[in-house]
Length: 403
Image (cartoon, rainbow, N blue to C red; front, side, top):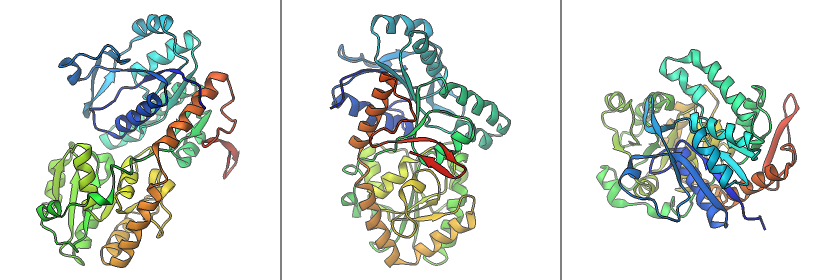
């Protein structure tokens, strides 16, 4: 049994903000608390915090923040060393876990190292890659250098996939451990398929509906999905596309696909019904560190078509439980969607197999892996030592992984 810990979790984003980092981090925090750990959540103050008072039992520590450029719904925590140092001097955590690398995360890193508190971290968002989508590609190298400097000062950096671990190792990152992501297969469930929702979409029971969930932004590569949809409709004219989410590209995408259904952002329960009421999940992004929506779609019984990258690479066996296009092979991605749209037998097979795969990706297992990593950091165990149920990553050879 894991010992009970005092854990300070530092993050720039947390629900009710809606994004993959916030939602998965909440599952981790909830899981750690359920296992008896005392978790102190250090995060920027959000709009909702102004309208309510935190309970006396809450361990949340609210800091000043500001909106991130191009991501106004996300907060960037401001430097907070003067507040964190006395806080952690009086109530010393056993471990500080930093989920995001902004100014708040940097402050937490400096204070923890000064106080000699063990520090672990997550690599969760490809901000260095996103810069190329906003005309700031020249920032990619400086951002990557900053991220490497940041994470190499922690005892362990957790990454969600082996592929990402390999790329970061090649870039000079040290002490990486692969800890996967989980999915709530009770919430995301094919049983939630809703005939009335499909009727509102204007489709028949046998009509294939293609769904995509995520921010409507350049880094998600959504024009490729719309191109594939347009070509698939030449074979299946009744096919429909549903895009869940919002973002700066919405108006442009509505012009590209005037017959598609744009739902905007949805709460988790309504989102789960949308997943279950579709048939195909088209995911054209190549900018994810993981892509939680892939597992959510698989848990909901959708046939996923994606690039051989991130969550899809880790969880999909091509033609067994989903379809994978080679990285950068956009025509291959289009062909896979077209062929799936006209093959009802393959569609049924992939949907069933996807659900079976997702059932083993439970959050409790993931939380246990994170507990093990934190306990190893506290005890000073080298990150190259194999942790039970997790994967240590270092370079064994030009094409191998040491575990």
